[in-house]
Image (cartoon, rainbow over the protein chains, first blue to last red):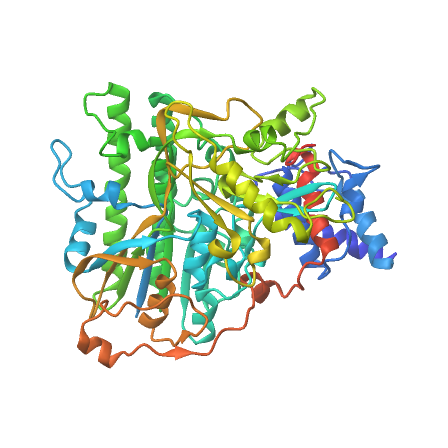
Length: 92
Length: 534
């Protein structure tokens, strides 16, 4: 439980810091999606993953497994999906 | 007290500047301050990197090393996975050697570095570093130190969107525009350099760093699109009203630029050495050379079949080669590279070129490429082909293209799947020329013009002017004629130990080198959401 709460809070903080200058009023919740809700483009996704890796001081979280589904690349991601993914990786 | 000022003018060329430093009918002297610097200082042409392109060339200025050592060859780098090729962007973590910002910092000097490309994520320095070519959305997090953003934000008139790289706008470079559209495009570029100048003046006046460096790149962007109103051989005042309006606006930009230079030089004071350089020069290119189309005709590559979808159409229009990677043995990855890559045999690509056949394959490829002619004139469209060991010797040579093409008009190639192979544009577009500019003033600097320097000399000159030893592995030199004998005797050139090969990004990020898996991950990220469609 502690890990879950910790990861969610930290990822939320990373995301809030990431979009601080974007002028968005969107509340950040687990259901918040990067593309649909926050207007991410592909460069933003790359930068965000780098920001997460930096925050967690890990570069081997294997985000490609989250991004690729059945050989295709996903169209969007929610914060909740990223939280679950990072939690899973930190436990492994 | 600031000792050394570097002002980078992306793509600046004496082809254009010479006219602006003279009194011209109806236009006056556009750049009187630069004219005075040249009248009193040391100047000449600056030979760019083997392929005169912004990322490798500015990285050479920042490191004192050629691309074969620093490892930056293009905006885009690719990874050949055998059965597929992924494209991603170069960044500071790919630079294999230290930058002058780090070398000076380690020597106890303070620095300010503004708008140089390939500086993100930023290295840790003693001072301030704001990288160039970064979207406004990521500016704050990519500054060193991060608190610098709040300070910059407080500068009157600051606008992050005006300051930052606009990927959509810069992606229009190379598009043919009507002059009325071009006017608006040029107009949008003027505020960007004003923003950089405001930051530059603030940091120079308030921080007084030992080494102060700023790069202004409006010169490059405007010359690319407005070459027809800038090239003295092409400009005709009798052209239409729209063209005259574009010319007047472009001249306004250069007048403002001259003012920025004067203000920065004045702020630095008379004891500072001031160096003005460009990463490459400029010229006009009239030919479109669809090099992959040519390689396809010769059987070196196969295009990826389109499924007719919108995604497929967009991918075909992207500036990355879109090929059937299971059947392509040689290709050009991007238009900016002007490079040809020979794909080697591997487990996943058994049809690749073997070590045994590499030399003969490469020679045949060169022969075939040199046969490409302009249908209008019958003349060869490729002037010269450089082998990688000629163009990019060094520890990073394996990352370079196998061949680098120099076209007859110095143009960039096209990687699109479109015929005919060679066509002539109605109006020449600006393109990079290997001869940039070098201007220097300051204590002891001789008054000479018409000199010939290499871009790697810039970093050695900077280090020396800062009072540092020049690292033994720097590839440039301080020209013997740069200073008067007395000053040179008092300030001899000292060669120090070679620097450890630590990349620019490694210092700040403390990240380990990316493993193959991590690189693949980054590539996968790029493919997300359509940046690279397949």
